[in-house]
Length: 137
Image (cartoon, helix red, strand yellow):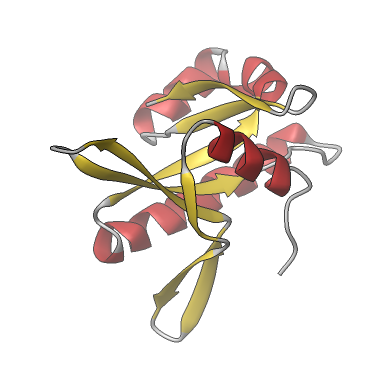
């Protein structure tokens, strides 16, 4: 299983933001297939609220065609989201992408439509500062 080049960067950024990495990777099984979401994490919100659990799929968008990467990321996100809706109901799936990819591909009319219709939840990170820039719910 190949890791995205930003895997460790996003993992470390989540840890610095107070998340505990619980799975690396998070394995979800459907039928006879094992699928691997890059990370599983949890964070204690407050004593009365309990843990918030997330799964994070990390994408670099480094291929020649960012649009082709866009299609692949959306497809993978959709498959994982559907399986997790059955098996990991208490865990929210996020797609982690570089902030510049977001501004290039997701801030136009098409990107806003896809975020809305596909119910994308995004973690935007800066690869140079190795920090999470923004969460989009």
